[in-house]
Image 1 (cartoon, rainbow, N blue to C red):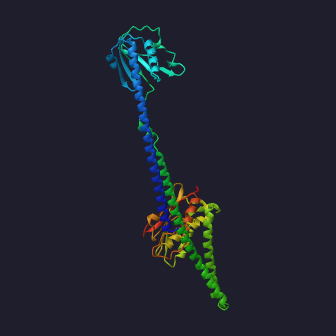
Image 2: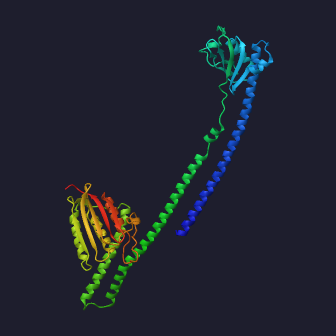
Length: 449
């Protein structure tokens, strides 16, 4: 998948998400508007019902006052007797010695006549105590009409109650008449929370998809580079072997055994090199499948480093390369696979040589740290940019070498090193500055010795 295709996928994805969000916003706005319209209509209906209820209560209370006065109150007094404090609370002025039980029966009858079927509670002002004495809550039902909510405490509803107190007014309260704010209805059913959740899910999914596509593209490019490098690495020894074999077949070297031996050595070395390259790739596949067998045994890291350093000095004699050992660790025995841990040291030294200018300067140092041994391999090479630190241990990844094209490899060395160190319970890290060299450090737990 090329860059143009990825850009097209991203653009189409963004347009799709924007379209979905626009449709969602459109329908949410329409839903909210419909809810508000429904609430307004309901409020108007409720308001009309409340006004009708209030008017019915006022008429019923005026009739009650008129009946209390035995039809001898003048009309002007009746007009101002009923005062509405709220939609569910009314106050009625009287100038009579009014018995609570009589008032209750009168209220029940007048309310029924005016089709008022709401629960109510009344209270009579007591001049002697300067307080209001309330009756029980009266509930309406189809079977018993109006009846006290409970029989446990009759209170002032008893006809045997002796009541000889002046009362200037009484009150009537309807507890079921409660208004509701339209804002609460709209907010409680608001779809914006759902919309926000959808946006977050879509953005997470889109970001994840794009990251997967980019990673797949990068992996595809890296694998393509690996195939190219591997083809080049394998083609060179195959060509050398083919050329040497052709010379051996076309010429008679029976009288020149030295040249015969030389071509045979070339074929043997190139074949060995080819075998090593193939084995390295196969080992990577086995490591990925956890099929690589480890023969764990005690390994003295100082002895291994010194032996490897000797081989390094021998191979670098012609180029003037130098290796310095600073072996300061006191506990040096680890439990490891000798072959693979040796390959770790060899790979790191090989990288130090490949990415360094002649003469190669390498320093290997050790120290004990956190119940283990820490080994650092420092070179004077071209260095690594900080942005590439996280990638140097990736499979098939090769550090760019600028104008240099003589650095060979598959991009498997550091990946192999990291896997081996991890499987031994260790840790791997790198420090580097561009044009100032690199330091690769790994830590492995030691065996008590």
